[in-house]
Length: 451
Image (cartoon, rainbow, N blue to C red; front, side, top):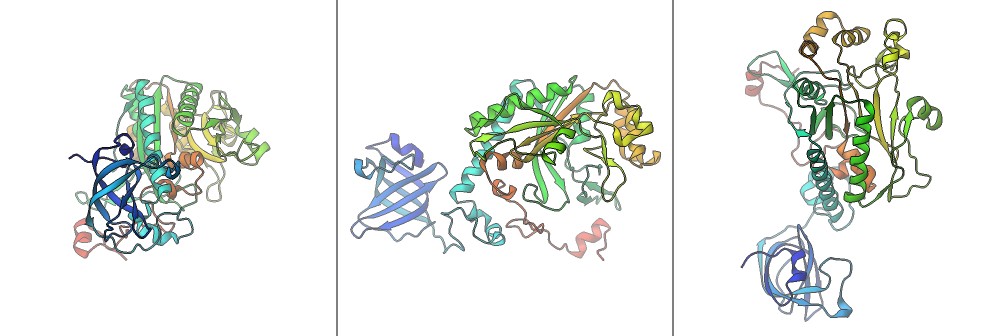
């Protein structure tokens, strides 16, 4: 007899079924006992008058007959609430020890380090199951939406070269070339631009990005995912229109919510700073959880002053300056505006992008303004500048963050709540106890000595 999922039992009244899953809850009423069985599809009530030696979270196989519940005992809160399984046999496949914490609540009152140590148990709780499934549905929708519009999903390398994206790189020693290092990509920025030169014109990727920067509630330490999109022969408005169409449909179809305004408002950086005091803001008058208030911020300055640098990129050094401001690069670069665009939602920045520089000489000028010597420009970016001499199309894109978008959509307060195996705020990997020390033999092979 084939396995039946919990959610399928409602359509099998009167049939014998085989169920596999975990004992979710036990209710012993003396002569009769109820076991709620949980599998990946949902929960179904099973009932026995014999009683079995089972405990919560045991993995079991139950054979029984599907029966309608009496009308006064129907549970409207679960999909299988009109039926129950009369148990004929219950086999314990794997016995569960007492759990280090309960998994039936939201878990937010439990010490986070403990939750992440036993993340495989923490993920059993309904809230996180729902979040991870929602993540899958969102990404699946993105793939379908873009594929139907002629985009190709193309993977780019993880072992690559350090690029100036504004955060520290994670470095990987090269065993075959001792003394040299790969860098994990902060984003696929240069590769997606090279794909435009290669003639693919419409690219996307669910890209893993790696940045050694301090964590915040809306920014995980170490790694995160983004929907990476790049398009050739486009202007900024083409990118914005595609993005707002995608996120309007995701909001309505996947999240089951509404967007506040469509088309999304376009607000200049200057206006945002004057009106809201920040370039990310919440357009909702009330914090309505069923509304997503998207807006684009445009007309950013190309450069900004920071605590560490007198001049640095507002976005990244590949962002194109506004055509009418190019002359200011030689006279007053801090006044130059750019073709950057950010997507904000309910007070969070959920994506950013730009039209890119495609003129090799302007790109060199930007690098020089940022303090790069000509030898450094050639070493770090020579491949990109060379590619621009072979018929580069105008291009640009956007990269919405998967975790931040989910945070905004479902009302979570931290990106860790929408990630299967996140790092702790101190940079410790969930479950795996990384980073860890490496033995001397491995270090010797790599030509590395730890001080």
